[in-house]
Length: 265
Image (tube, rainbow, N blue to C red):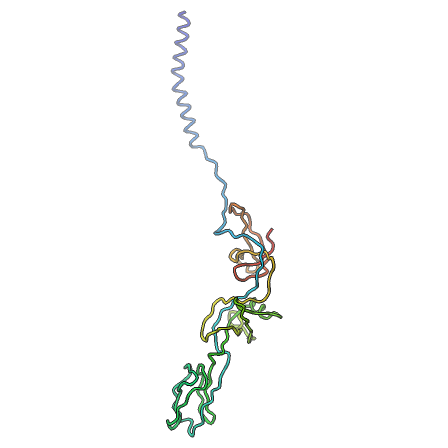
């Protein structure tokens, strides 16, 4: 009996001694675990900005032009005959705008009024045996544009039928045979409802050509890589907006809000 009690006491003492060691061991393991490296989450590149879907739709080809409405016609306004035309008192000079019927001067003896018989912007006053004033018409105007090679190629296309977005016909009056320092060509267009001196930016003109069920994307999506202005790329993403890869595409038409492309799977 005494032996059993002693054994029990001995085991109890061992347990009392082992308990703190076990607690310290458990705490140490827990502390060590805190300093273990945590798994690094995968780095996923997201799409830049709004995701644009590639879709099929019918689109009409258009070109964008900018310019200023200028006179498309010169007028030689004859002045009445005078004994001494060089003594005439003219009230107008270069750059003045005159309208039909306006008082523009007096005869050499100041007894007769000289009134305009046409409207326009004075370019020169010529007095002599046959006195006249050269005018730029403000009624017959055209849009003076500067276009690049791509637009010029379209404007020279055979069978081209230019029209405004409202369907009004636009005619090409002249195309310069020279280029400016930026490599652009001057083109004069007859555009309805033009006003002399008005500046127009990014006027969209329909060419009459249509692309049916073309594969298109928002014009902001395709881009050029650094140093390569000829190759086009698009960035592809999955449904979650995660970046997949850059794909080279072919561009068949650029204009308006959409670009027709090919090469997207």
